[in-house]
Structure formats: C-alpha cells, structure tokens
Amino acid sequence: MAILIHGDAAFAGEGMVQESLNISNLKYYNPQGVIHVVINNQVGFTTNPNRSRSSLYASDISKILNMPIFHVNGDCPEEASYIGKVCAEYRQTFQDNCIIDVIGYRKNGHNEADEPKFTQPHMYDVIRAHPPVFVKYSKELVEKKVLTEDDVNKLVEKNDSLYESEYKKAQEQKEISLNDWNDSPWEDWKVPNTLTMSSTGITEDVAKHIATCFYTVPSGFEVHGAIQRILKTREDLTKKRLMDWAIGEAFAIGSLLKEGIHCRLSGEDVERGTFSHRHHVLHDQKLRKNVHISLKSLYPTQAEYTVTNSCLCELGLLGFELGYSLPNPNALVIWEAQFGDFANMAQPIVDTFISSGETKWVRQSGLVILLPHGMEGQGPEHSSGRIERYLELCSEDEDFCPPDDANFAFKQLNEINWIVANCTTPANIFHILRRQIAMPFRKPLVVFTPKSLLRNPLARSSFDDILVGTEFQRIIPDRGPASQKPEDVKKLIFCSGKVYYEIVQLLEEKKLQDQIAVTRIEQYCPFPFDLVKAEFNKYPKANIFYAQEEHKNQGAYHYVRPRISTSIGGARPVQYIGRDVSAAPSNGNKVIQKRELKKLQADLIAL
Image 1: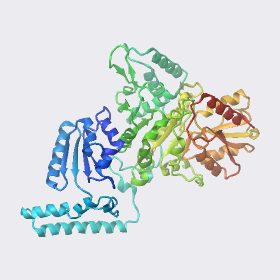
Image 2 (image 1 turned 60 degrees about the vertical axis):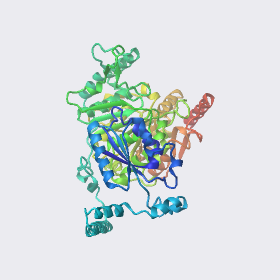
Image 3 (image 1 turned 180 degrees about the horizontal axis):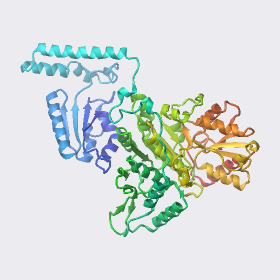
Image 4 (image 1 turned 30 degrees about the vertical axis):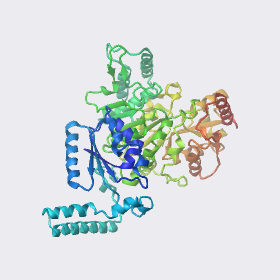
C-alpha cells in the first residue's frame, strides 16, 4: 500500500503533485490507490495560505479525481487514527486514492532555528500558549483513567532512553556496509564475488526469430500502407543480415524478454516512435481497437512487455518510471522523451534523484533515459537534449586516468554514478540496453539517440555485430584508409553522434579519407581513457581535434577536451571544431543554419 506524505504548501503549489495525480488513473500508471497525507501546518516557510494557493483547502487540487478528502484536527489523535483506518479500508476495497488533510501547526520555525515571529507573530503567540498534542492527549487519557501519570512518565522515559541509545550507536558507527541497506529483491547485489559481467551478444537463431516476428502481422490484420513499407524494409534488411535502429532496439528488448526480464518502455509517442521508426504497436485499419504488439508474443514463456504512450508531462512521468525501476533490479525500464529538449521539464528528478540517488541513499536504479538529439534545423526547442547538463552531473575526475587493468571498463562502470552515451550504430544501442541487465549492479543510463539516423542507410549494423562474443564498443575507431597508413594521417578527429556520418561523407567528397582519421566516442561517461590513449598512439603525427555539431558552450566539448588531454598526458593540444557560442541550442533561421554548416564543414577539412 502506498502512503505519500505532503506539506500543505507543496501539495497545492508543486506541479509534480498535479502531474502525478493526473496519471494515477491511467492504464500502466495506476498504483491501485494511494493514501495521501497532507501535513497541514497552515504556513509555507514564511508564506501564509492566502498567498500560497487560490483554493480554500490545500487538498482542493485533488478534486480533479473526485477522491474522498478528510479534514482532520491534528490535536485529535483518535480521530486521525479512525480516519486512517477508513482510508485504508476504502483504498483496499476500491483500489482508489484518498486524502487525509491533517490540520495542525508548526511548533518552531521552518528549519527549527528560524524565528517564526518575524513573519507570523500573532499565530505564534497562539501556538506557544497552546499545549502540545502529546501533553493534551496524555492529560485526556489520565482524566479518563485510561492511563496514570506514572504510566505516561514511564512511556516518556522509555522513548527517551531508546533515542539516546540509538544516538550513541550512530556516533560509534565508523563504516556503512552497502548490503546493510539492501532489501529484497536486492539482497544479493553489490557482493564483491559477483562483480563479473555476462555476455550481451545473442545467437543468430534468436536474432532471426525476433526479426521475423517484428516484420510479420497476423492474417487478416490490415496495416496502414506506409507501415507495410516499413515492415517490408525490415524483412529485406533481415534477409541481408542487417539491422536499422528499430531492429536493434527490438533485438535488445526481445532477447531480454526471452531471458525472463520484464521490459517497460514509456513516454510520449513511444509506441510509434516520435519519428515513426519504432511501431511496436500496430493498429488495424479496419477493426477498431484491434492492435498487434509483436514483442508481446515472441515466445510462449517470455516475460511481460509493457509499451505505453504517456500523457503530456515529463516531471511526474520520469519520477514514476524511476520509482518503477527501484524495487526490481531484473527489469529494463526505459523512459523516452518526445524530443530530448523536453526532458528539461523533468530536471528536478534528474538532479535530485537519478544522478545522485546512490550517493545519497545507497539505492541503485537501472533506469534508462532516451533523449532524441540532433541539430537538423528544427529550431531551439527541437534540437538538443542538452548533453552538457547531463555530463556535468557525472562523478568522474577529468584529471585522473585510472590505471590500466584487465577489468578497466568494468571497474569504471561500478564506480561511476551513472552512464551517459551517444550511440551511432544499431549494434551499440542493442548492447548498451542489454548491458543494463548484464551488469551485477545497476546504474542509470542516459542515451542521446538519433533522429535523422533512424533511417540513414549508413547507420546500419550487421548481425555479426550482435552475436555471442560481441559487446558494446566504447569507442569506434576509424576503419577507413586513414587507419591503413596511420603514420601519414595529419588530423585525428574525435566526435560523437550523427555528426560522424556527416564528417565521413564530407571526407569522401573531398578525397581526404587517407589524411584525416575519425574516431567515435560512443560512451562519454565513464570516459574511455584507455581507448582514447590507444587511438592517439596510433597516429603519431596527427593534430588532435574534437568535433561537434552543437555550439561551443554546449554539447560534450568541455567535458571531453580535458579527458582527452588527460588520456594522452597533455602531449598535444585538443582543438575545437564546431559552432560558435550561443545562448540558444540552435537557431530557427535557415540562412544562419546554412552559414554555420558551411563554416563547420570548412573547419573539418582544413589541414
């Protein structure tokens, strides 16, 4: 049973409350009833109720759901207890929400040390003359001969003794064992002898089976003409043992379902995919409400697959998905933003809980956040997932390169607070999603996903890249002419994301593939210090650059530059290729967009 405790000012004022209430009766988001307890002290820090809400009661926002609301006098414990039982029975009977608005007062200032009479002098004259609820209630029990004064004194002494002894224990505690904080089903996690990673590759038979199911529809099911063409493309790719982004996702999810791992994908438009690439839910064009979800019926004994479009909100949704991921380490929980830009509405969840939750509360989560990202001329609100914001939350020292070790990459994953990646191939999105379950611990994962690459013929992977024995590639080295004669290479460009494909096309046009090498950094955090160093050593005469499509004060540049420098011991400067600084993530002017692109291209090919 879920019990949520709120403050009166927060319940009426915070958008998170309204968003959470709004989704609470939606399919796949319904917690089957929550008891909300509003601790109503009739003041918000120093703000009076008439300045903190437009409604009469703090609980009035909940009337959008027609849930029962009980206003209870905080000075009456028996009434509060009775209403608590009523709400528990109501919730159990109807699997619905209810609210207990406990109207009381705050004895001291906001942080106990504040002087409340600065702003509420008359209220605190009344409060300080008012007997505390314990004194008031114990006196009432003595008068009714339920307890004696001696009984009350013994209860006070017993509790004071307990508090004092526990306080002393806390002072003597020198170390905190992480496993002491693990509860079921996390009890066997974080044990040193389990720190090994299982393979993320799959067999060809599994890949072919999932692919066949992914492009096949039931007999008599009428698919939209445009989707028929998408399914035909999937079939053609499968016959060539190739996969695009949608197939890579399907292979990751489908193979985990086969292994008994529950998978959940939610967010605005995720069933179809914002850019119409996914189509996990097919709609019959003739029979109303007749849908086909191929990944739900891959195998007779597979785990449950939940894919659901969400309402239009980010803060409440991301909070819900984080909560969904916490109780079960054996579930792949994915939240996808409609555009990466829109995740800024959920920034408090990212800052306060996801990036720092393990540090604060010794609680791990394997939540995956997918943020569509790419500068494609769609304007400042539909271009950037704000890579720079997520990278500044990484708990990695830019000046320290961990010592070489056979388990280098694995130890990095174990020690970091979360993983941030920008994948450019279907094989890598496949591996990084499966790696979330293969790891013997859980870390949140943020992936900046492509938009225009979803159907780009260059952005395809072979089945060979996902078979048993393969794994996620933290960097993808140059495999073109430059890699054949590395001693002749004049320029080594590190980059991430879709700009890679634009660079290689440009180099091909200008016939510079033998003079400029391009290496993709697929995982920003933890940073692949070891592999970057190896790439640097491969090209002894090359100048080092980091290229990005984002503006200079944005993107990954300021995160990557010092880490590349640390990797190579500062042997050569790391130079910048990209757009100039800007207050906005991108501009909405086509002329300026073309001018920026032209300058970017000129800088890329300059020797």
